[in-house]
Length: 148
Image 1: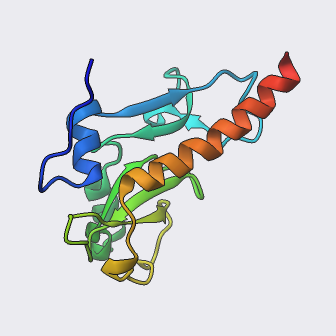
Image 2 (image 1 turned 120 degrees about the vertical axis):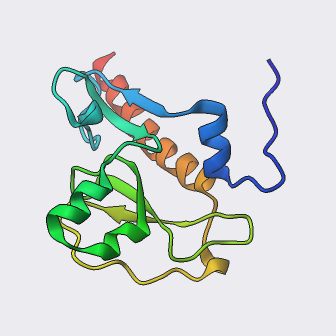
Image 3 (image 1 turned 180 degrees about the vertical axis):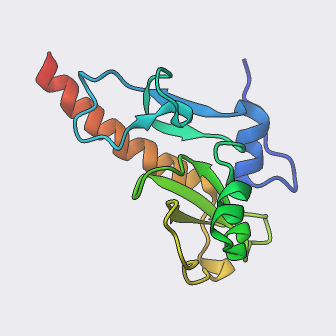
């Protein structure tokens, strides 16, 4: 099967959603040592994952209502959201000409938005995803060596 090409005005995030829809990487407890894992969809019984990416992964409107912090509406959570240091969001305040947004860390206790990233410093989501998967893969491979 031939890979689909990005559309002319499509960001790497939009391409990911169109082609894959979502990404969930579930790991076994034999290899999860050192991985930032959390329950898939933040529910028990769904398995533990170290990567869960989707457009509807977190109810940000609910957090805005609960905290009264309307600034949070300027974020779009795409990975996790329930655990400090393990979740990420797009900062919608700035974007590149190719519609890429900066990736920022996110957790439910966020009080203040991070400093805005200048558009020329924003990297495509695909670069973030590659770096994240590479980091997680190194940990899993190291754990597999210990198991085998």
